[in-house]
Length: 305
Image (cartoon, rainbow, N blue to C red; front, side, top):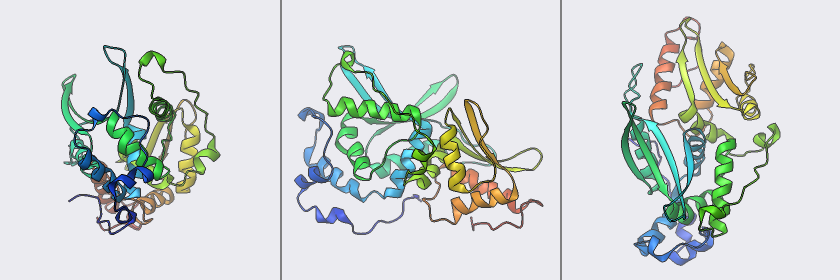
């Protein structure tokens, strides 16, 4: 069963004329007429994108921040090629997990109603890739993110996203004409002001977080990220944790105390945030089951999963 709940009537029903969707979700830059094959179906898809729950989009942005990237390349003729790419390992069947990461990408595709999936091998490992092309980015996804006031938080993704916006809005065609884009550095207060940080963290955890039990039976929740000390401090504040992120270029936030583990459980199970889905949800369920059987953690408040 999909993790996406039923969505009732909303603002999309007020858009009776499909042409009005361009007022609500204006496309970025000029789109070649040949790039949209079935214009009527595409307009309907754009209109229906307003039904996608904002919480899902917030988690999707967090996942892209952790495991995706905007590819900005050059064609053989010197034109710019843009796409959003998410790569995941297909095999997550360890420690009792049976949910494939490729199924997670299918959930993204089925909910967003765009993009393509492909499987590939690299160094004897199997991977799945989800790709959203330039036309869908400028016609639907980015206008939808802007409509919901959503954006990316990690330094690399922010830089890529700002460059994509500059290219599309400026109708820049050739790779050689892409200018250098200055990306302002964010401090702790910038991250603390992000209104969608809670569901963003759900998605980021699905990509870059982990729930595990150490050899000494300590339960752990961990988030790691290169050169993002301020972001990790914002996450610490969001979860009201007692522990601080580790210093250095490669920082991580790891909690294992009884008090902090309860705060993590409260955040992911009792705070009304968008639910974890995909294989990380299975990892979380296995983690909760282990905590129930732990002498140290068995008196915590657990969800019914």
